[in-house]
Image 1 (cartoon, rainbow, N blue to C red):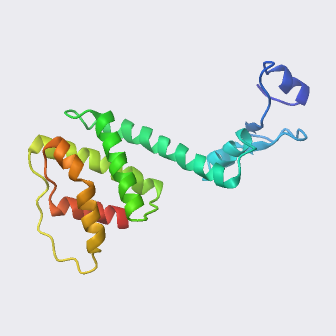
Image 2: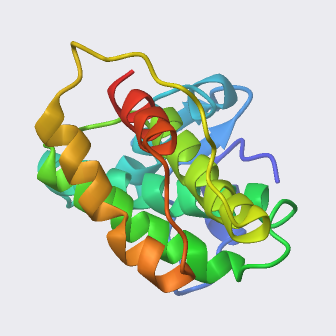
Image 3: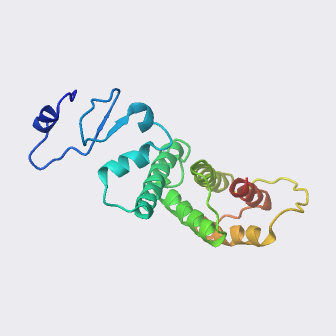
Length: 187
């Protein structure tokens, strides 16, 4: 409902609820009540603005951590929605959970801080890649030129991170697959 006065806003709430702020198309100008415009809500800072309204007692560090957790839950839900239509043989929830484990291991071992877009691309690509290899019984085969700028340690960490996946699904990834994952993480 449109809130034009503080009293009207309070009447719309149950006894156990409190008004944390207002989100809308116009600033009602109520004293001491924070306002977020729809434009701000859908901006890059939108989730953080909402979180600061709902959890004013959190420190900036705690708020950032909560934002990261929320972003990962969002990415996970988005990935699940994306892969559910492409995965027909494997259990989508299981493969996604396993890939999130691989991803977390890689980002921690390699000290990477990938963007949400890279995270999403990694999860969707890798879940679908495993499905493709399971169905076709062979990985992508491509001739690779030698890569002089390739970080051999990082490439090795990526290969070892996927060993549990290879074992669990009785598959083998080719160097072309690993190289694509390397490029994805370091692009």
